[in-house]
Length: 447
Ligand code: S3P
Image (tube, rainbow, N blue to C red; front, side, top):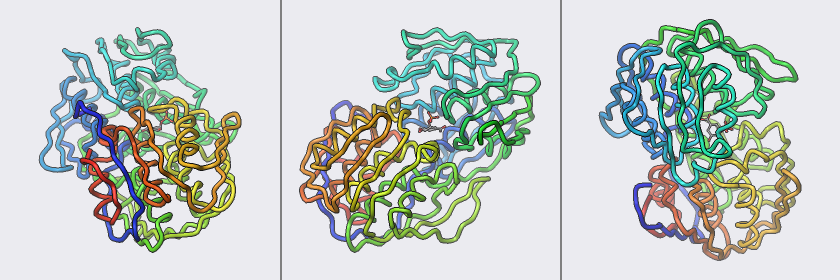
């Protein structure tokens, strides 16, 4: 984290939010752009790269393994890759900061190179489970040495003779799928991942964009089988990163709950495997328009126009979870402003994110005067139109918990305070200024 001292922030009830703002680049796409640019032959340029701490950690890791990675100007980066299989052993420990995606995907890259890399991260990342990625990478021939519970710090001892595998994911995880596919790049034959439910397909789309052969077909029980053909020739590309739908979620919900708002968010990624929140908000009665749909570097985008809306409670089925897994905290805030009960089902994976988000939302909303229940893996929020607010929230290094409760304070009766907003800079650079620019009242220095 960039600053050592905690950064308390307070949000106050806002008048109507108005205006247009581009939220920063998509975090998932930015990580992958740096990784594939580092493996491609020739020059790759990336426009709109998220310059959050998570992605900067990935840029450093790619440099440490021999790629040329340069920042030309704000959001514009140039890479010279090493070719598939051309990464070299890093001389120092790779510090992935707060980033689960960065760590898991780079572990995949290292697994099929004949060297050892050491990984660490912040206090949040060092609690997160890595067995889910260690297990398939070990089947491919790598060895993973880690702390108890397969938690970081850890070392990946890559192999010089990787084996192609067919791997059925035990949990729906794009990170695990992507780690295996990235390991499969420097592996002979074909590497296949069977997913029980489709998860975000940015890796598949971008691998194809760089020239790899990836076949996607139907899998058992409604899922998918993704097959990568090893040793592709990846060629440098020009990429434009869409605005992040997971970041856009915060000004979207803010505009919905603050009366007299109309906000435009240009160029937001609308990949259907990321768009579950917006589908759910529309079911709740949200006025969200998708204008000017188009494509950017193989990803669909549109300009979102959001107007204040009266929301009603809904049931969110468990099979929607992979398409909105990072958005449940902010959906729970929207649900607190709705009339009636919202039941969000099948949220087990929320417990192993940057913090235990299921517990964090239940506790925080309760403190803010909202009636909440947790039943097994379901979160149930009883909305009553306008919560009381007036609470101090511990964010536990979790950017999305921090932003969710700040948004709540823009519409609640009393201000909301968070103990530390520093983690916001991992995914949403300039969050406070962007929200202030739309008319939000958030006090404190900007992360
Ligand atoms: C991501 C996948 C998701 C998501 C994370 C980003 C990715 O994690 O929560 O923020 O870029 O692949 P899981 O794969 O653990 O569900």
